[in-house]
Image (cartoon, rainbow over all chains, first blue to last red; front, side):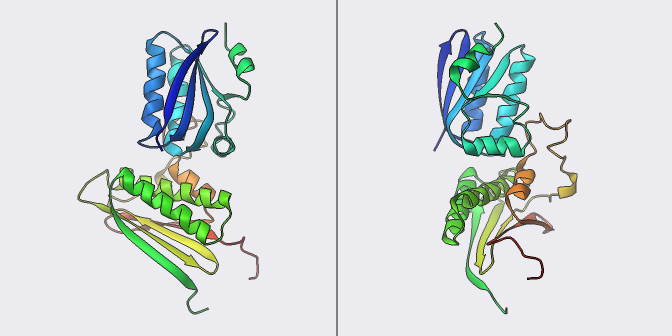
Amino acid sequence: MSMKVQTRQVDGVTILDLSGRITLGEGSVTIRDAVRDVLAKGSNKILLNLAEVNYIDSSGIGELVSAFTTVKNAGGELKLLNLTKKVHDLLQITKLYTVFDVKDDEASAISSFTK
Amino acid sequence: MADSTTSRVSFTLDSSLDSVNKVELTAEQTAQRAGFDEDTATHVAMAVREAAVNAVLHGNAYDPNKHITASFETTSDALVIRVADQGPGLDPDSIPDPLAPENILRGSGRGIFLIKAFMDEVHFRQLHPGTELTLIKHRRPAQPGN
């Protein structure tokens, strides 16, 4: 199953609702393109909603890290929302859980972005 | 025990992402048939996917003239999966630690780490040319003295 991305705006934050698998050749490129598109449109507050992401591999993890650093280097913030247990466990194993700002409530996630 | 092998299947596949997906799916199904619980079967499938990605991408570099082989062997006490490529060879000691602070934000380099995290044993063998990874998941933790 490929990955799908839906984009919405809430209070100046761009939320990318991702669903499916983030793996080499499937979701990885989709995320990269989606984040670049958001930055190109002038928004640099990005919330990746991973509630419907049921699988991620090392390429997908790498893509999340690259997105994080790309947005940070552009002076913005990228945060993660609603991790599934599988993704949560993977970020713990790879010690990335504390690198990312991980949220489990959309409203508080949005209010946590720098105004 | 002379021979505890209960089943074995092997494939020779193109260097493509379709092959990666086939190997991953076979690993998950084999682990489930071998009686591993859902979480363990998922972890085995993830580890095998990483091995197959390494073989296709880093080993064979998607070369249509090179193939990967994958074998799945279920024994009375373990699931043994071998994935081999025809690439230039992989030195596992040369792979940077992805948990090191200087590497934590790298966009790649976590595949072998995840394989080791999810399997009980991981062995590398140089094939000249190519590399074979053997991934082993025991049916239960090894007990000292057994």
